Length: 227
Length: 227
Image (cartoon, rainbow over all chains, first blue to last red; front, side, top):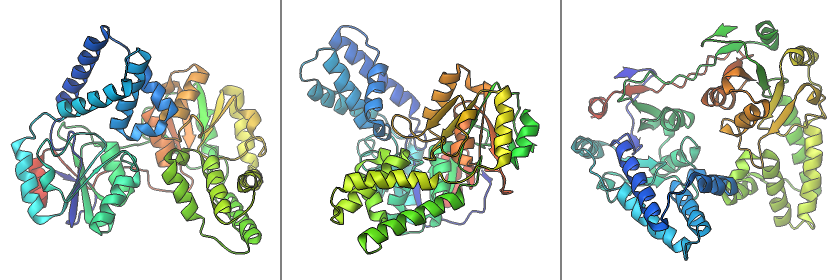
């Protein structure tokens, strides 16, 4: 454990889910393989789905904030383009199945134990940019509120989920500590919106520091650097 | 001047505009006052325009990436709600006038001189999240390409403007140095997308470092911290 800023005991905690409370990498990899195989079986060939994903994002860039709707949209467009009848309905079914596969894993016992202990002392809020089914993975009970990016909420590090949490808890942000693994969405997001930030660094990564290559104090210095 | 990362002489440069090549604070303040006064005169009262801004952003959150269209949309909605006839056309006129007021200033001579010198040695690209009329302020001639956030391009630090620039220049991003004052949109944005980053820090600010309050290497440490 390493302290970088003045820490004061928080009144409430917010938690990122994927890769913070469990290792999401093998889970999402398996779910993606399941989806690709299912689609290849159905269509009799492997399609490059990235072009459909790019197309729907070009048409509606806000889908970047909603992983479920984004995937549903590219599935629907791709299936339709491939001549599948009732493409939209099939996309809905596939998304439901995908979320089930993507949520079919066990949260480590130590996460359960920790959440149970913490929930006795702090209101806990879950906030995720992903689409795991938190009921299905059996940890919903620990949280007083659960927020997913999507719909009206843009993804972390945008303010939406942080503001919704602080409002729901009726707490000033500095009394909330956000726990997450991602240097940008979790650490930078928490700091931007006044939260205390607990960075879960379980891979011995160097501390994320966004230093420029060079700073200049005026444009004259820029000339000295470049001309 | 201070070096934080290994610097190699770039092949091309990209420039933020507002607060990098000129002080935008008094300019935008004056333009906002002009807009508020004009609207108050026209309507015979002062309106809280923030509610209209919030409404249009709620309806179309992507407008956050397009300051001109966002302002045009909330003006149009507000004027319409206030019973103004031809609200949309009036909003268009007001926006045209706003951009003229907002672009009615002189870029400092030293910026002209610097840009002229740099343009002899490097392709220069302008990329801005704002809506200054770069022709009107008389610096368009220095740039081979000019990119505004909005339309198909999301704001910095999103990849859109950085990618468009690298593609237009046919250069790998590491051969481009982006010059800007904003720690997030300019410094973090440039680094995220592989550019070299030149941070213009003309206010003696501390170097922007997004350090968490505390890092933990596993969830057990979190328990030690919190329970």
